[in-house]
Length: 236
Image 1 (cartoon, rainbow, N blue to C red):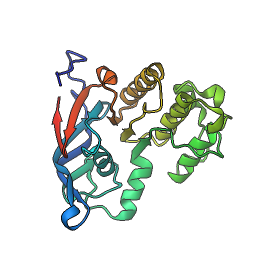
Image 2 (tube, helix red, strand yellow):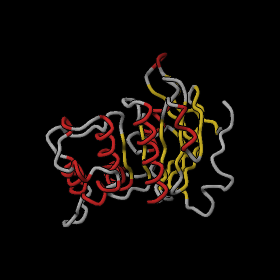
Image 3 (tube, rainbow, N blue to C red):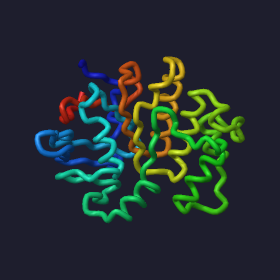
Image 4 (tube, rainbow, N blue to C red):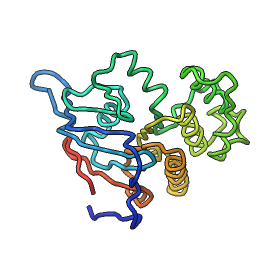
């Protein structure tokens, strides 16, 4: 894969590291079926940096997101969010980090069918024990969805659901945002809109963002690109 250049200026210059993985390894399965899915992975994403990870299915991308988002603990290595070590944190502390420090965006938006767009955001704010006077409208306006605030997921298009999912991921102003194939269900035009929006909001809000994607057309929008193969991560 050829090197991609989006700017002559280092986009991470002067920024603190929001996400840091150092020498991270993880094995899954048992006995002869045991497989090393992360093999001494190193990744640093600065606050406000928009990074992409590409690679074939089964290369370890989903495991990388799980470890970065404190959903899984690695067998060895260090995982830090804003300088705080997660591998030595308790289960309760990691749960708190996920609620307050990590925003997840999934392939289909992963919205709750019974809640309208505004209530999707209010629910996350309650779970994260955010302000009682929380107003979801500024975030919905930021993703162009204020006019659909009272609509439920079944009344929204795929692109609209993803926009609500993006707003929901930003409710707690997380340190890190993890995107798992956010454009998989979208056409090329909607994909460009969604990734452009994600990149802009990440930089504006100082969020360290990692996007796993198969869509290489989106890579020109990213500050950095990494390739994953057989559990090993390399910068492009």
